[in-house]
Length: 127
Image (cartoon, rainbow, N blue to C red; front, top):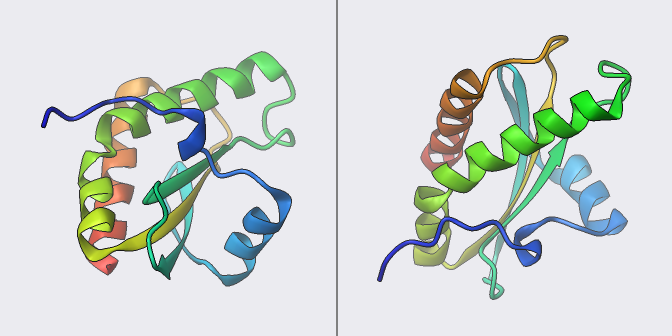
């Protein structure tokens, strides 16, 4: 089976209750410029990994800047998600992940992609 490098709506983490539970009960670590919060639950749904991408308005006042960073983060995740998806499917677990951008300035795509890969590898190691 060929891997699909898509990021459909059903893989997005939505809902105020789910998000607040993730931040309250999840484990966190930092791979600068990303703060990663993740939560693992046993029993898989149709979607093994759900992701939330966030850029604070406090650091980036203009929506254009926030949207660009979020777009770059989603693209970096989309291209590097294969390993974490396979691991979650294999172990029959559901993983909820939140990526928060914590840097004060915008970083280029190559750096962001490298850090996203590092963050996903750290999550895979901790499982």
